[in-house]
Each structure stands twice: as structure tokens, then as C-alpha cells.
Length: 241
Image 1 (cartoon, rainbow, N blue to C red):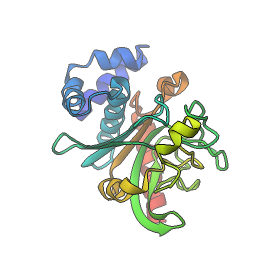
Image 2: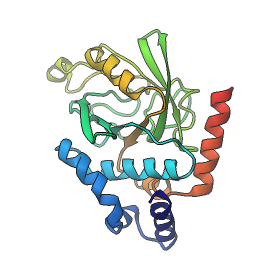
Image 3: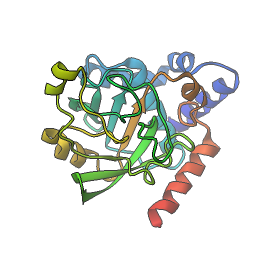
């Protein structure tokens, strides 16, 4: 099913059909979206569809299937609960909560994204979670960005999931937003261990924003097998190193 999906995705993309048209034209795509949508009312359908498309493309090109998927919808403000964590085995929503964006990505809304070291901006695209560690923010989770040129410097940038006191909804009434990170998807201390324990060890995280250039060029949303396979090999080299 994954191979058929990816071949269809690639052939239509070459023909000049947009990702939005493609997703609507793929009948086999919709059942998982429908299942997760039912347990996550209010989720952005486009963000969810693109998350599943990226995940399926990764699996079809060498990534191990995951048990859980996290979706961050950066089109929503930081004052909204814009992080969803799904159990893919049981089609359940495990959590919907707040998540920070980078301080240079914007104020309440994130509108700027980067893959550059020192940018203090969030990154878009598909990530694979890796190992946990104890650092300056306590219990934290490292991730590898899977999209070449989009988020593949995540480890170099120390983009991790960690707890942060500034991810506090009480800040919203005072300053109109929660606090911001240096680019990490930081979460509330009250839910950090639950988020990290559910996402550690090879799960997927997908960060979404309706950035036209990224949507048109993403190796995963447009399922470009050679570039995706190259990203998989690069990640394996980094992991062994």
C-alpha cells in the first residue's frame, strides 16, 4: 500500500498537480485521516494529511514504522493547544497541549522558520525521535530532522523536546502568548515526561505551516524516493557516529 501510494504521489507531482489536489485524489489515503480526525476534533485537516503523507513516504523508503506520531500546527498561535500526540496502533489521541516555537520565529504566531545554527527559529517538516538524556532542561529527547535542507541540522542545533516553565498558559492573559524557545518544541513541565516517554525511540514528529515554497518542494510531501533514501542513509551515518 505504501509503495502504491508513493508511486501515485510522485507521478501526479511530476504532472504538476498540487499536494492539496493530490491528497484529495487518493482514496486509500483517507481512512487513517478519518480515524485520527475523529479522536482529535479541531485538528487542522491539512496538517494531519500532510503529516501522514510524510510519514508514509518515509516508511516506504527505508524508515521503520512508528507506533506514535506527534503533529505540531504552527499555523495556530502559541496561545492555542497546537500539539497532538497520536497512538497509531490504537488510533487514539494521547495528548493535545501547548508547545513553544523559537523566539525568532515570531511573537504569538510563528511565521519564520529556519534550518540554520543560531537562528533561534523553529524548523518545519518530518523528524524522527531518538534518545533521551538529562541536560540543562532536565529530561529531554533528541531528534533527527529528516528533510535535507529543511530540518536536517536539528541535532547540530540541539533541537530537542524538553520541559520549560515559560510554556505556561497563565502567561497568555498577561502578554498574549506563552514563552518562546531557542527553536525547540518545548512543552509544559506537567506533561513533559509523558510526551517524551511516548515519543522516544524512533517515533515521528511533524511540524506544519502553510509555507507555499516548502509545501511545493518538500521531499516527503511530494515523495521523492532518491532524496528520501539519501536522508535515511545520512541519518543512519549520524546515528552510528
